[in-house]
Image (cartoon, rainbow, N blue to C red; front, side, top):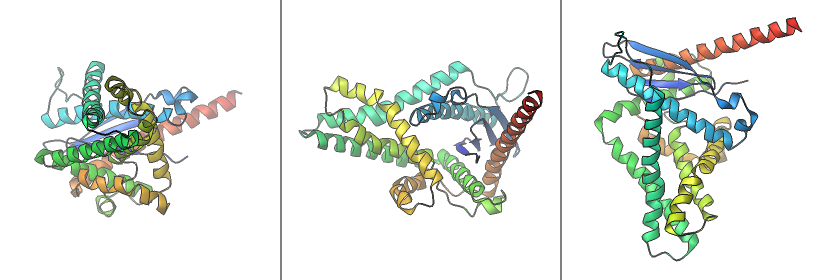
Length: 308
């Protein structure tokens, strides 16, 4: 079975992941590459219900956020050379830190992209429910794009966007089956259908259709619905992105996904060869872990067959 790989840009590095493991590679101030590899204990492996469509999207989103926070913390510690009591660079983040970071990020996103647009639209003199939902959706997308444009002006984020581009190019090169060298990887596109930027855009588009069933309730139910229905919307958006990644040859589908690909131009920049090298290193490490686990599973299966 073909393994789907994904990733995320971090501070001076890239995190790459497979269904069962993830690796982060970070360029140190001295110019070396620090690597950390971890396994993923996903509930989707234990119970079939967590692998059902839409539900798996919610689980995958939660896992991605948790891994992303850990990878960002590792990269920050490597870049700042923060060390533990043994004098080694910290490569772990506590469960409490993950929960706090998760709650802070989700709370900020809900207020800015969900609750805020809903309340703003509710203050407008709009009578039609259908028009209300559409205007709310347009405001939400406008806030999202404006937010990306604003943070793209920050000089410190330019290098993060370059690593984001390196991550996309590396995944595209892998899926094309070419040898992973900086020269080969640099030939590929900065965009990818499974990118988180495209996912967030689809969350906002799908929300328009989901919220149409809710109508225009009182303001407190309006806020509640925008929060409680987010997992369903995220699960649906995940299925769209997942399907798109597996059917990139479908021109009609790619045309529908084009706005998400265009938006990625705001969150990616052309990387340097050194940055691509870091991205390749992260992907190679997670591939090695994936292959080792696959070999171990085959060995155990063979042993069981012999005993039977």
